[in-house]
Amino acid sequence: AQSVTQLGSHVSVSEGALVLLRCNYSSSVPPYLFWYVQYPNQGLQLLLKYTTGATLVKGINGFEAEFKKSETSFHLTKPSAHMSDAAEYFCAVSEPKDYKLSFGAGTTVTVRA
Amino acid sequence: GAVVSQHPSWVICKSGTSVKIECRSLDFQATTMFWYRQFPKQSLMLMATSNEGSKATYEQGVEKDKFLINHASLTLSTLTVTSAHPEDSSFYICSATKGFPGLAGGPGTGELFFGEGSRLTVL
Image (cartoon, rainbow over all chains, first blue to last red; front, side):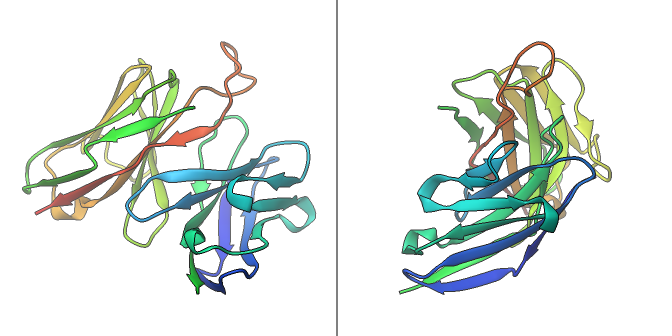
């Protein structure tokens, strides 16, 4: 079984500042890891994913995440926050065999002008 | 691209009635679809996994007679909330995949594509 813990339910950053969202996972097998963004009353959009290979993954909208097996982490970062980054962010994990996602509780990002 | 569309986006119904939500993959054939439920300010909880032509697999604690799932074609899955009650009010989201890498029958990409969600309010 897999699970995800997102540290911090709410993150507030200034426009232009670094965005850092923390995610730790638990999995009995090598995991697939995902970050999704959700805007109000909308579905989820994939930001990036790690399956195999390079541990630093680049996604859309300037986001990237690094898979650190030793720390069981998959933190999401963006060097410079934009107002449009205000949204809910979900980290998710799955086993490679079935893509059944287990989501974290989510982190709400607000961006201050 | 890979687009998944849900209909309706919003639905309000009276207690005791049944509501059907459709999930369509518009430009690809979805071997598997997933249905999630999301309460306000909370994460997504997987309700069931739906494979075309077979019975859905429900997660523990999800009433299969309450939430009927049908996956009659490779582009359409439906979720019917039967005899809806106010506690069924929620945001329901579907996702679809083209397939899973390494499984016999097709390479797939393994990526999940999400619908826009359907907000159900039961009065």
